[in-house]
Amino acid sequence: MPTKGSRSIWLDGKKVEHPEEHPAFRGTFETIRQLVALIDDDRVGFYDESVRRMVHKAFLIPRTREQLQEKREAYETWALATYGMMSRLSDYAYSVIAGYYIDREQFSRYDAGFAAKITNYFELVKRERRLVTTAIADPQIDRSKPIADRSGHELLRVVEQRADGVVVCGAKMIATGAPYADDIIVNTPYNREDGQEQYANLFIVPADSPGLEIICRKSHAETDRELYPLASRFDEMDAVIIFDHVFIPGERILIRGHAQGATAAHRHQQLNALAHHQTVVRLATKLKFVAGLATAIAKSIAVDAFLHVQQKLGELYIWADTIDALLHAAETEGTVEGGVYKPKAVPLQVARHLGTQVYARAMSILKEIGAGGYTQLPSTLIDRFEDERIRTLLHRYYAGAAASAGEKTAWFRLGWELIGSELGGRHDLYERFYTGDPLRNQSLFFEQYDKTWLEERLDAFLDHLTAEARRGVTV
Image (cartoon, rainbow, N blue to C red; front, side, top):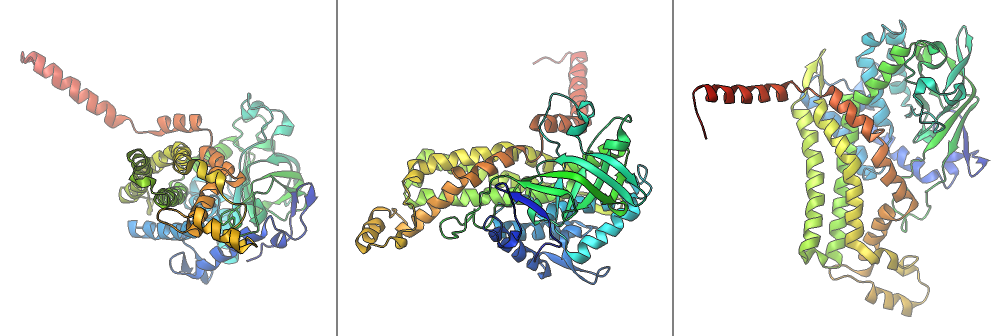
């Protein structure tokens, strides 16, 4: 499924004229085409009468626990197809949009047109199967200052108001998947009334807008699918978006010049349980993939018989099952709010916080189990060696205790892609910080956490002690 319209994508200092044919993007475009095709599968999509076609279940407004679990199956199907390696597929952004749509009347207090605009876009993105990503973070220029105190050029800003929209200049970073997206959700949580007309805006911009420049990081993609099964398929690309006098049409501006509204929209994304549901499904899938790979590597060289390796593998299983259990707890303990069955927020938030630490630990375990074996792999597949005598020797000396040389080296190559390649390094960084600043997130968790039951339990205990003291009870 090609993206709609042309866009200005920059890689290695050059503009990419045909991204779907470029080796840095071709493999991922093919993966995305396969995923979009799955929307016509009942596991991923449902027939939506309003647009008269199958749409992704991320757009399903769950009324029951069973419908929420249907959404999980859709997320899981995409995640299984990518082994959890594509972290910003459109099902995340679709969930963000669905959350805004559900709470559209609440946001109308900040912008009277919000409800109508998000409803129209909700229908548009379903009907056209538009691919969507987000770009929320500001450039790292001077992080010592709060957003509202930064220099004007550091923030995305309105430079011209027109009757039919606005013109903006500035930049946003961490637009993961931008080269593959049709639309980008953009918000600046500017929280001061002074300057809000210029900075405090939420909009969804078409990626092919004139003046919108997609500046890509170095590609981690590979073209050899046998040697690099992950990098050849799943490099979703991260980018900085530069807005050089980009026109945003009025129908795409959801909140205009309202500090409280822009901040509320940012907070909504941070606390959107339906979007968090998708991210935890992906995390659980990825951890299971890592646990399975670590097990295969350990068995291939028979180190799974060692107690310390069993302990490490057991730890991986514990973390994978913990995230899975938190996911199921969130679904089981969900509640109906305004006619919508929402997963319980706390288990999902706990899973996301744990994920920032657990993935790094999983990579450490994978390194410890494979150890020096990762650095001893031949530079290509054994059967590609042109000399038959050398191939015979390699099949002998690269074999494992419980695996052929081909199987063992394939597993070790996968492991190296995760722990030692550029793609693997990017994933380690991403899993640590994709939820945002861990310190701020845990502070927000403290702020939002219902501490009443803790206080009540402590009060009951103290009351019990006081009552015993009055009766002269001693231990």
